[in-house]
Image 1: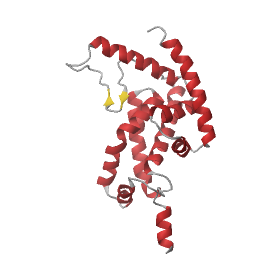
Image 2 (image 1 turned 45 degrees about the vertical axis):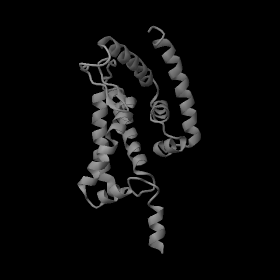
Image 3 (image 1 turned 180 degrees about the vertical axis):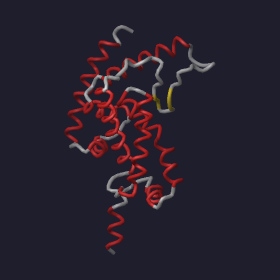
Image 4 (image 1 turned 60 degrees about the horizontal axis):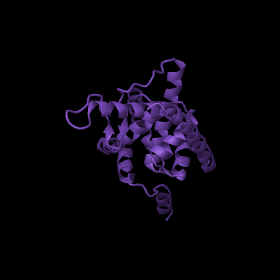
Length: 206
């Protein structure tokens, strides 16, 4: 009886439970399936946090490596995706501090790829589709928006990215960031206000 209670306590409604269980048994294929499922979503979050595609790729690689090494310690008290997002957010914030410390923050380039639901917008334009001018204009707008996001303090940036870009609920963000729900709402309000003022300035010239 106690085993059943313990099992229910450690297995919340999580689509990834079976894959995670297999990972804990050392099945590499199961972890590869999780990577395939979440790598684009994690890259999107890391990119929006850091503002640099290459740095974001490294963060996501580190995050999956960290998750793989720690998977046996994962207790199932939260969804696997929530746990993984927490790792990505923490590593992204650490990477931002490293970039700031070494003074290597570069001006965002309009040639950098922008993450969308379908993946990255490639640097090289396709042969067919929108004209080069249209693509450049879109990338310039994306660059200016990302520049405004980059200007936010990390605590405001993460709330904005998780809520307005990734679409998480306040409860999910609370669990990812491990802060009270009221704090999430307060940070999001300030982030939106700051972003709105920045966008008024940078997009007014377009």
